[in-house]
Length: 391
Ligand SMILES: *Cc1c(COP(=O)(O)O)cnc(C)c1O
Image 1 (cartoon, rainbow, N blue to C red):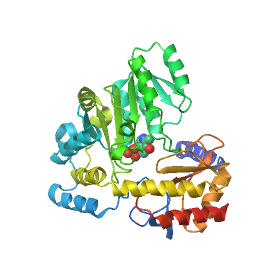
Image 2: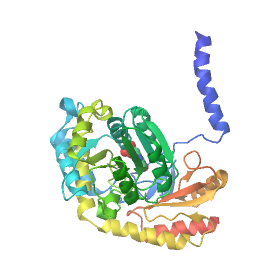
Image 3: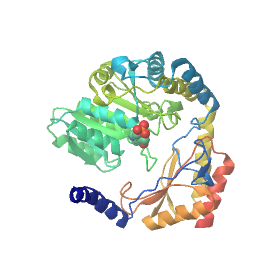
Image 4: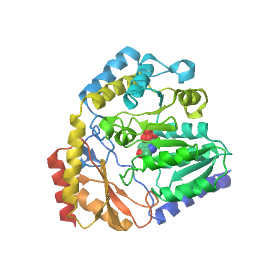
């Protein structure tokens, strides 16, 4: 018995030791403050450029009050999945408000899911099966790749943003159903997918276009997201947005033709077989959505910070990627150099995560600066000064 246990444990230990040897061990830093620029990390006060809380809603007093009041009214748990007994008035109201916001001209419904990860698993496993073909940008978020695995469709990955390579791959495929799958704003680069060209290609092949707008929703297109920013709409687009980034809470939604939403609600296993998000979360999100929709000041502040950072970072010795979004990566190249730069900033009280392969391609280790409306211009200047001091 002990021998068997040592084999079981031993295999995992060997795997962990290999990760250590490859420099891949991840450390979970313990944060002792609400999400925001001024935080405490492993007991040390820090100015953070590390979260996806792009509009500063995660600790907004109005959103907090909505959660607190809703806990009084609705309790804390949904009690069951949506199809059993967990689908409450707040969920229903939020779905309607999301649909009306992201597609003001109508024509789409929205479905609320517990996370973006689950939403992508649901979308891909419902729209594709093992006979079909999924065409995915090489820099897509990992959960889109996991959704493709769950669908058992054949997966073709095309070079980042390379519409020509995608067109060629689609031409060669005889699959009965084709799906083009892309991040709208790429999470480690901050650039925007060529969505107009992808939609045109989808039209030529009668394919679906799945758009993961985790980093555009709330930030671009007056908050409606990247598709609104680019003026794109089509019943072949299935749009997904997350509610734990700019919206400041947690969860995700899918917005698409009502038949797509009905099919997901009926058959998406990551929707059907999981407990509904707490109603208090939906109520907090309704208030956050109202702020995204009606209060432009946060977006104006964020975009001013983006411009300020880019102007200052142009003088630094690292490569600033061409991003107009809240994600502003500084490519350092070598993994150890990126980690050392992160440590040099931390020594100055500034927290910017270093991102290394395999999360990003080899040789492109970087600092992923993420800006928020909750920062001040002085915070951005402090980051630039710390980077200059570390250069
Ligand atoms: C964060 C993220 C997700 C996952 O969303 P969660 O709600 O955190 O599960 C999906 N896609 C992209 C591009 C993301 O950045």
